[in-house]
Image 1 (cartoon, helix red, strand yellow):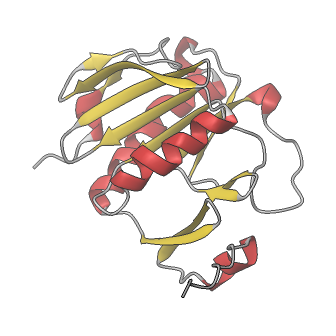
Image 2 (cartoon, rainbow, N blue to C red; image 1 turned 135 degrees about the vertical axis):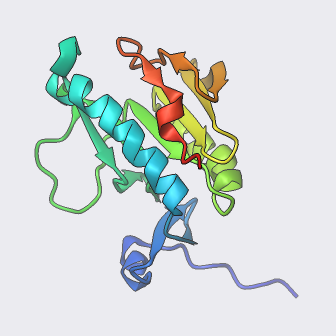
Length: 188
C-alpha cells in the first residue's frame, strides 16, 4: 500500500511556526529549526558589522552600493529560505515588495553553520542557491572557526578556499576589505 502524497507547504504554513523557531520551505517541505545559539549570533553580528560600513555606506574607502540584511526571507519559486546574511548589489534590490519575502536572487549568501542546520545548509540549500544563480556562498563554522568560500561558475560551485582561526583575509565578493576572522569567534 502506498503512502498518501504529502501536501506541499505554503507561505501560510510559516505563520504557525512558534516565535522562538525559524521556519523555511525547502523543496515544498516545511522545515523548523531552533533560533541560533549565542555563538552563532555573535559570528553573524560581527561579520555584519565588518561588511556593512564599507559595502552599504561606503565608509572607510569602501565601494558602497550593496544592501546587506540579517536573516531575510528569500523566495526562490517554491522555496522560502532564511540565510543568516544575504547581500544584493543596490541596483538589483527590489524597491517595493508587497509581501514579507524578497523575490530577487541575492548576489551573496552567508550561512553560519549550527549542528541542527549544517547538513541542510551544505546540501539542499546549497543546491537551491546554485539553481537560482546566487553568485557567492559562504559557510562559516563558529565551532571549528572556519570560513568556506564558493563562487558560482556555469551553475556549479567553485571553492575559493577555506580560511580560519585568526587569519586576516580578503574574501570575494568583499575583497576590498580585510576581515580579521578572530573577531568572528566567541573565544574564552
